[in-house]
Length: 92
Image (cartoon, rainbow, N blue to C red; front, side, top):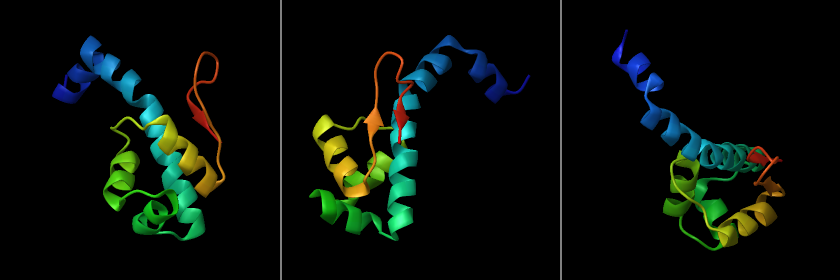
């Protein structure tokens, strides 16, 4: 068994994967929405009133995103983020 295969069987690994799932969904939605508009990270940052570093962190899929930032992203990209029981951490 490879080390990576071993890690995937680890309870800690599975817990971390579950924790990051929503962040990855947000990241994929932001990357897609930004790309569809032909925007750079800097342009998106200007649209939502933040820095390109913040956009980069969001797009990494490893960092929490505030509700305020999600609302600004939603408005700028024309997407809806849905989370909670039964929502399956989706973004449309």
